[in-house]
Image 1: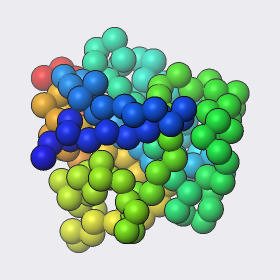
Image 2 (image 1 turned 120 degrees about the vertical axis):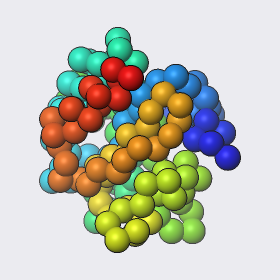
Image 3 (image 1 turned 60 degrees about the vertical axis):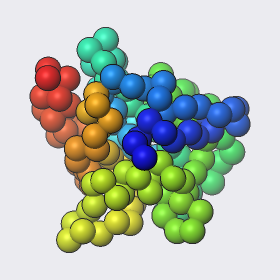
Image 4 (image 1 turned 60 degrees about the horizontal axis):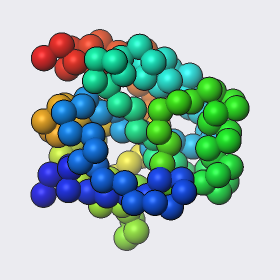
Length: 160
């Protein structure tokens, strides 16, 4: 199974195929509106604006599994992202990233790019995964890794 075999729901509860993102460089992020890292939306949007024309897609997946920091409905999350941060990159429907109800896309990401000491679980909001144009999960970034800090990795992958 490849990353492109997965589907997920958008904020309107419609099915979206990951295959829509074939041949793109992807930065996949589990997000939350009430987290200390929420201000990273600014940096994520900047990356999206600066590199979308070169093939970068930023995909946000809201998750309420860490301190209940994403309590809103999908429509409330959409409104928050647009009004508070001017987010234009897609923010999809809320999902679980850990546990028995973890979304299969996140199971795939965790399997392909384990965390420190081989840990598979997501530790907190704003964990990021970088995926190349072939669908290979290249790297996992911690919540502390700001979008500005990982920009050089994105530029390197885009130039291949």
